[in-house]
Image 1: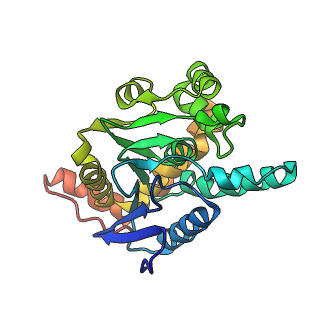
Image 2: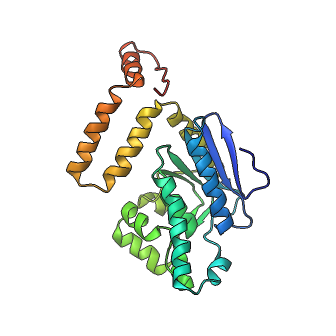
Image 3: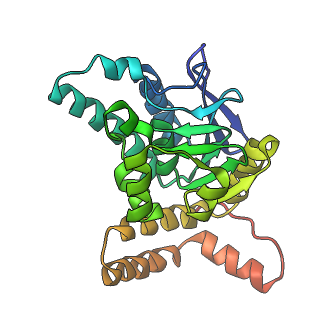
Length: 262
């Protein structure tokens, strides 16, 4: 997977695919960037060498500071606007529904479409100087890539309303308090710690990792009883794997397991 001067760059570090959005000055999500992100995601999802993905932004100013405002400025037709939003939602849904974990390494400003991208990821690690928000209301529009829905589910309806109605930014400290991010780290440690976490997950048995992803993602939209039934079903499936046999045996023998993802 070469970069070829693209605005979405890829690097494989052991079994971790590092995806970097590199569109100065603020890594805005233009249609071109979104298409390249989609293509990179497809390659990662189909590549058995990639077990976990990390998404970050190039430079020190922004993770992603939003969608491309110039593109939005050119939209005056309702169908065209809905199409743009639906296409963006479909790409972010691909992240959210991925059985391979995706970690957002939020190195700086994370606004609008950037916050929506981070929300679609499974885990979020942020710099202590990062700032977050859904400022679309300041442009007379609303979030279109899932912000109103994922923010509500992650941080609660009251906080989601506040952020979407005011357009205000919150600090990394506040983002941690409200559950928007999993962890806040020193600015220089964001990518290192995100990749470190990704490598930790990549060393687990991937059949179990993928089933955890599946049961949490699918179970979240079900009733508790339906979710529990799915968990029981998938627990039964994982009991038939070689990794289950190896993991339990390694525990009993007091040694590290050697998972083969089978």
